Structures are given as C-alpha cells and as structure tokens.
Image (cartoon, rainbow, N blue to C red; front, side):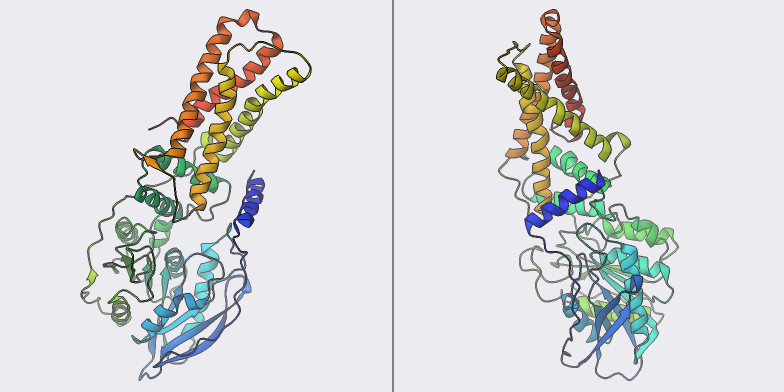
Length: 476
C-alpha cells in the first residue's frame, strides 16, 4: 500500500506543479559593510559536500564566539534565506555560518532529522576551525524544522557550546503541523468534526502510509539529552508553531534531563521567524523584530563566558503569549484504524457499492429485470461511494492548500462541502437500515442472485457506519 500511495502522491505533486528538489549551486555572498565574507565547504552526512559562507566582524581583538544557522523545512534551501539573521548576528560580534541545505536525500516525501543534524555538526566543525573563532564558544541556531535538528545535533556532541531555537517545537511534527492547518481553518470560522476527526485522521493516515516523514519524532526525548544552555525564541504572531504551548514543553523536557540553563523570550508582533510582519504574522517582513539580534548577541556572550543571561530589555517579553487555539497530542493510529484497515474498507466500498448498479446495468442489457427489494438500495449505492470519495477529495484539497485553505462558505462552523458530505453519510446510513428492513420483510420473494447482490451492498452499509463515525461525517 505504501508504494502505491507514494506513487499516487508523486503524480499529484507533479500535476500541482511542485518542482523537484535540485542541488544548490555554490555562490559567493558579498561582505556587508563592516563584515568579512568567506566561502567555505564542509562534509555533511553520507560524505555530501555542503557549501556555505561565514560572515564575521571585520575587526576583532580576540577570538570571537560563533554560531551555525540551520534553516527550516524544504529541500536545497539556499543560504541567502538566512542572510538577514547572519548579517545582524555578525554585527553583534559573532562569526556566523550559513550554508545551502541539502537536497540529496531530502524530498517532498522524505526527510531525516538525523541526517540534517550530522550536516549541522559538519558545519560546526568547519566554523570551529576558522581563524579568529574561539572553538569552545561555537553553538547552533535552528529555525522551525531546525528547532528539532539543532537540539538533536547538540545531544550528539559536546563540541556544541549552546543552542538557540526560533519558532521551535518540543512536540511531534504531527502535532505542530495539525495545529498549523487546523488553526488556519479556525480562522476561517470552521469548527467541529472536520477539525477534530477529518483533518486529524487524514494526517495520521498519511503518516501510516509514509507520506509524513518524521511525523512522530520524539522531541522531548531529545531535549532531555541536551546539556548545553538553550535560548528559545518565539514571535507572538507565530501561526506555524504554537507559541504558547511549546515553552512549557521545552522547560519540562530540559528539566527532566537535569538542564536548568534555559532562557525563553517572546517578541511582540513578530512572526514565526521572529521577523517583523506587516499583516499580523501572515507575511514575513524583511527586518528582524526589534531587539532580537541584540538578545542573541548578549545571550551568547553571557553563556559562553560563564555568566547567567542578563534581563531582557523591551520589547522582549518574558511571559508566553496568549495562544488562541490550543494544540493537542496526536498519537499514531490504532490497528483497527490503520492504513491497511482503511484500504480494506475502501476496497469493500469500491466493490460493493459499484457492484449493485453495474449488475443492474448488465441485466438490463440482457433484457432481464428484477424488481428491487427497495428503492433505498439505490440510494445506498449512490450516497455511500459519493460520501467516501468526496471526503477524501475534500480533506486532501484542504491539506494541499497548506497555510491558506479556502474551505468554502461556512454555516454554523461547518463548510458547505462538509455539510453536503455529512448529509450523504446520513442518507447512506438511513438507506442501509431501510434496505435491510425491506429485505427482511420480503426475504422469501427475493431471488438467490439478488440476495448475493443485496448482501454485498449491505455489508458495505454496515462497514460504512463506523467508518463515517471515525472520519466525523456522522458527528457534529
């Protein structure tokens, strides 16, 4: 099943125009005023050569601390994506390495935090070896996906002096992504079973099929192994990572591992990457949030000198932001709802629901007619497959829409397409009951061949009831 679904999704991605990952070509970044720019290459996971740039102050009277920047999700993200951060951090006295993210082994369907962590450690070794860099004061900074990768790399090497995460998560990628997608629907006025069952269970089905790499990555277990000082930064307008839920999860995991050297700060009006946003966090502005680069520079200076971080100056907040929508833990599916079970149900529906009208068509072509035991059977054969196919198509559409879903007109918290699917589900269940009662009443008059056809149809109707409950089609 996994191979078939992977093949289908690759075809869909091709139709949607998602470009294949390509290796980033080495580039040179001109030195910003007051800084030096040096191209470097280093070896990452699997012997892959990665290319980057080190920005550093042009003048320094002593070896300076350094930091390796790890970008967010996506294959082959060029180093220029983090040029603003690198420039501002270097102007605060740090040597900063940015590098082109790998595309080898990283696609729309595959990613490995472990491999990315090894890439980051390769960059760390390269930066520690640079002239003018104090090798004992080099750490890692991770944005978004990098917020999972940086702690993992730090847990593997004592050479990492500190860890900084921006828009990071101490929860599974499944929980974070589902919060991201369902929050977008909630902002559109959606509530109820589409969010609580349809979206959640579709995401878990994708993970079962191998379409959501690292879905259940155990972030708390990694954080419990981190011994380095950690700075967690979130913007109050973060719409991709739960900015209220994550800090307590970070603190608990670090504390459980015996690490009490953590600092959490929040920037008013900043987006997922701690940039200023012109529209409430939905669009990233070019500038970093005021005080963000200063905080990084002073915090790194403090922890690499053995001092406790000093108090943050406004507009840095020390209390977590108010998060409008909470995230929920999303465990893997139980065996009875696994991908194989869903496939079996889908095959049953495809065979049973289509066999009823096809048999009638064949009989008609042969000039044979059999009086249906009930016209409700026709409703079941029509409403059942329409609800099944429509549910998958609609939820897949919402998933493909990403951060900007258009669920359609919403009535009482339910999009009209979802209400239509729920109506079809109710009709299918009612038709199942009516057909079963009619067959029981006229059982003696039903020919043997018709009994087989009705039995197959009703078996699909019986299976449809728990299936529709699981997907939320029969729930408010």
